[in-house]
Image (cartoon, rainbow, N blue to C red; front, side, top):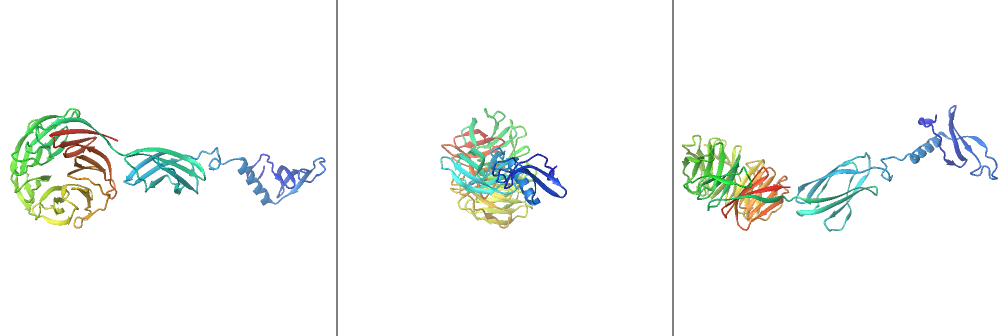
Length: 465
């Protein structure tokens, strides 16, 4: 038995001839060779057997060389029969100019680099575009100029051997198409909310309209409820629809039976009630120059004014999250009001906007405001006493109304944009629906958009990725 458990016969050329046998004798390693091939028998006579003593270090080196040559390592990237491959490539858009790719690998290499070549669309291949460690299983491309739909190709190499090639068709745009449409009886739906199988629409001078949306292909009006003013915005809570009714203030409509709504209570406000939120036993309404009005609605049939805040500007939007009311003034931007005690209000913080502020939504630590021409302004409200505007990608769009769902913001005007806000510092458009006339409001619920427009239509739109 040879050292290290090697038992088979191996041959190697040496200056003394061909190795015929290696064996141990006492404490020495011997090689038995045949002479005559390297000048030991230049006359070509009969081969003679010799017992030659060589240094142990030489023998071990020779053995290692034999094994490395006769038994290829399946993980050797230079071996054409090796199986060093990547698989299961996935991609994820992280921002307007950023994409993350991840993959599985079926090898173990302790050192080395992977070279990445890239090709976008019809552009030429970019050789050695990036270099990453061979043990990584993901990579972020910070310089991708991806359009709504594009071919994105990669070739990955390890020590000059190509180990992967992919061709991804990147299409992050939502596919949006119409499912059903319903006529809103000669008025414009200014605001829409969905609860269960019904859509509730604040329909301007026509008051409240309730639509059965259980069949998205055939939405049908099931009831209406006229209000004395102009229904601008609606808030649904339990069995009531609370309506900011323009010059007629607050209207509370009982919708326990959606087929038979009726006004249960009303409360007047100064100027023009245009936006509403309800929290606990109070309704909060912005009323133009009439400021913020807080109305006690603990008894829906007998609402009354509990408190108010008179600003020096026009107020036209409100959103409540926890103990704060986020209010926008058309000309003054964002106003954060502490409402932990609705009877004792105080201003917590303010922040200007780059243009007229038209509509507001809040999610987590950020306020999202639709503004004229600038599209959207995002404000960090982590510290309500010191809100900060975020310097994000500019989306040129005339933002009239805004809604939010999970990681998406919808901004409407002539149709609407769908914006991915997963990273508020790096937002990007993932969908657009265009109309030849103004849309009034749009929301997303499950896999559908619900939209009202200035042509007296209510639309249900499907979404697919």
